[in-house]
Image (cartoon, rainbow, N blue to C red; front, side, top):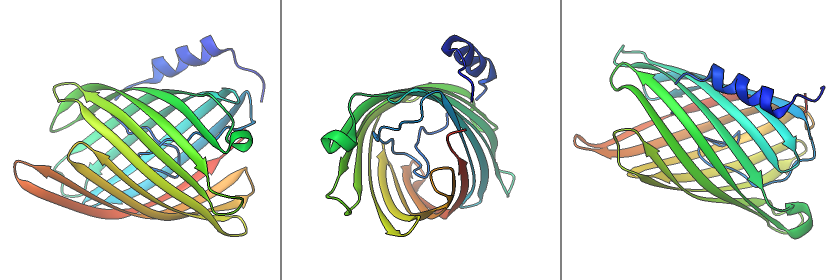
Amino acid sequence: MKYLPPAALLVALLLTGAGPAKANDRPYQVARTAVLEDDEYSWSLESWGQRFGSVRGFSFEPEYTFSAGTSVQMELSRYVDRHGAQTGHEAEVEFKHLFNNIARDGYGWGLSLALNTSRSTDEGRRNGIGVKAPLSIAIGDSAGTLHLNAGLNKVQRSAREWVSAMVYERELFRRTTGYVELAREGDSRYAQLGVRHWLKKEKLALDFSLQQHRSRSDDGTQRASGFILGLGWYEL
């Protein structure tokens, strides 16, 4: 992959933006990670489909890595309720920078900033901003990795929401990793249990997970569950 000037990339991303998606590092849905990669000046492309209660969605996420610790990604999503209650589009641009190398220090930490916009049939257009501080900790030589997040989201016409997330991942067998994710955003709770299998090591990955969501509103507590199926291409 030839080097793409950062200014040109940022202009392209901002012109593409349309509509808030949750910043995430696949295969996680809420959490960010602080694991340093060595693939400078390279692209990755991730896509996934999901069912969440009566909602069906599809997301596409290109990411460009400027250096080992600095990257920018954009997420585009579309979702539709099978009962016709709501449809919508979401888009997000997120910048992440890591401050150290987990392979050297045993832990890594960084900061991410996300700008998002969405349009739906029930809420119209809304813009938002989010910031997260990811911390990743290597647990021994083969006991897996723990990812911890703390952050804040602010969506137009809504109060600020504190965000926290925790992920534990561990290799189950050759080229296959299992993970569990727990997250909280304001009054919402999220859980995910899944596996990632590398069809081609460090190049092509297939994800499958089960997810559950619980939120509180004026109508009481609402629960939804579903699944996610994703595919990712790396170091393009």
